[in-house]
Structures are given as structure tokens and as C-alpha cells.
Length: 194
Image (tube, rainbow, N blue to C red):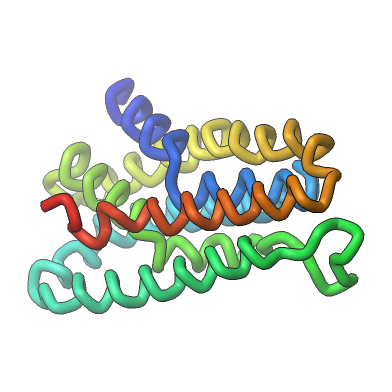
């Protein structure tokens, strides 16, 4: 159990699309307004881990072409998100409709998040190899338990730099940097190093 909790913590605290978006959200909207986004990640990853172990993994074994479809959809969506982050308005320019990701948006984002897929597939393979419902539920529970503290660090870091980012130019540079890092996070998905 300790190894599983450690795996889930390290997998969720390390940089990836979720954490980069949380840092940008923390900087742009503050910690409190980013809470639904964080809770959506926790719920989405936990449900995904359970469903992957309960049968989705077998579907990918049967239909390997689904891996390519998932990659294309994931890359397209993440590129669109990177564009939205890079072009986000400053606090003064932001209109009333501008808001952070909702719980549901963050939860459903996990289904196109390549890192979430890799985390869940690896966790099920390593810690629930029999794919019994109990072992899969334990894996999902581990993610539910440790994800929130792990990802909170990123939203908090965003709030730490928020005051510094009150300057519109610095905020623009920050958002473009976060968008570029999000695009760079696609490197493993695209298999450019293999």
C-alpha cells in the first residue's frame, strides 16, 4: 500500500498538463476559485483509474487503433488549451465570462490527458495486475487520497506568483510560458524520443 500511495503521489505531483493548468489558474483566478478544477482532477483521475482497471484496459488490448485515436484527440485538445492559456486576457481586460475550469470540465479533461492515461494504465498494471474490482478500487482510492495534496501545490504556486503577475506584460509572458510548457509536455505522447 505504501508503494501504491507513493506512486500515486509522485505521478500526480510531477509536472504535466493538469499541474501546469492549475498553476496558470492559480495565477489568473486565485486558489479558492481554482478549487473546483482541483476537485475535478481528483475525481476524474480516480474514476478513470477504476474504469481502466475494470475493463477499459482490455478494450485497448483488443483494439490497439484506439491508442492512435486517443493520441490525436489528446494532442489536438491540449494544443487548443495551450492556445487559450497563451491568449488569456489580463485581470483588467478579463470579461465577466472568464472563469477557471469547472469540476466537470476538469474531470472530463482527464479522458484526453495523456499523462492521466499513462498514470492509470501504469498503476493498474503494477498494483492491480489481476484487475479484480477490489484491487482496482484500491488503486482508484489511492489516487483519490493523495491527488488533492499533490496538485494543490501547483495551484498554490500560481497564487504565490499572482502578485508579481499583476503587471500585464509579466502575466502575458507567464501565460505564454505555461502554454509552451503544456505543448512541451506532449513530447512523450508523440514518441519523438523513441
